[in-house]
Image (cartoon, rainbow, N blue to C red):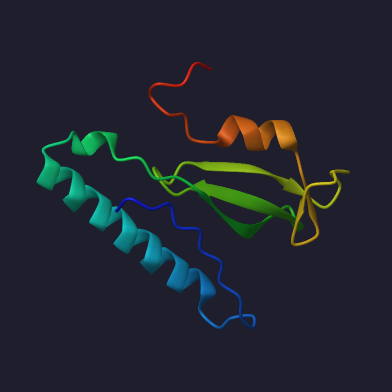
Length: 110
């Protein structure tokens, strides 16, 4: 691919933004795997990452659930009662939980 795309999607509520984003990420991941196969690289080391946020309810309290796009691992660390400058959809985000949930590159130290 040779580039590092950054994608932003805006639109009205319930207009299909999440579905479009999932499709674009899937297409980019498939393209990356095919590119790596063509070069003879290790496909298991395909490196793409990012997070997708969606609301969820627990005991009638709205919170944020985050998926890692590379492995679909979930972490739940957003809540209305968290007092933080980092906010998504009006939910306070716990910065330490956000950092812990990020994908680790195999060559990183930490």
